[in-house]
Length: 137
Image 1 (cartoon, one colour):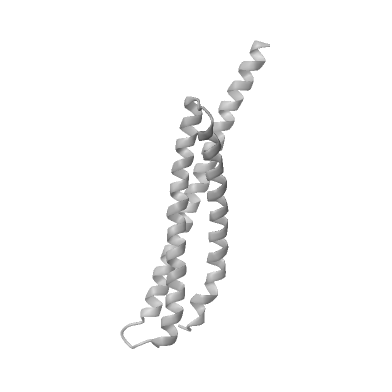
Image 2 (cartoon, helix red, strand yellow):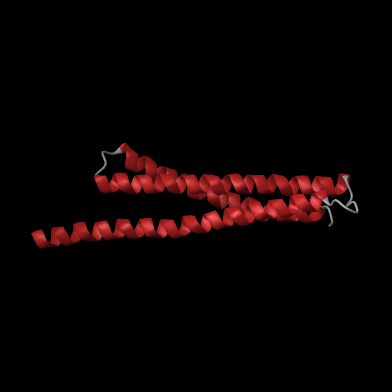
């Protein structure tokens, strides 16, 4: 394995990290708005779900940071320790880093599906409120 291969993956990981940070900030702001006001039971339920979503994003971010560190370490070790006959330490670290990226992407997929279900719940609740107001008129 060439030493520069893991380093070339870093910009892609950086883009995923930036995207995930933006999602975390947006979600954190939504939760903050919900918690600043006096909440109904439904809003409290939604805030709880969104806080769990923050937990998923935090886990994904941690895995992405670990993978970035693995890619850098793999590249450095690829220069310092050329592949030995029985032990390809840089290659093993690269594979571990790739597994961390895969795990993070799986968490982000779960996050995306749960986000849609939360939005659907919010839409259904708003639809009920609008229907009730229409009936009262």
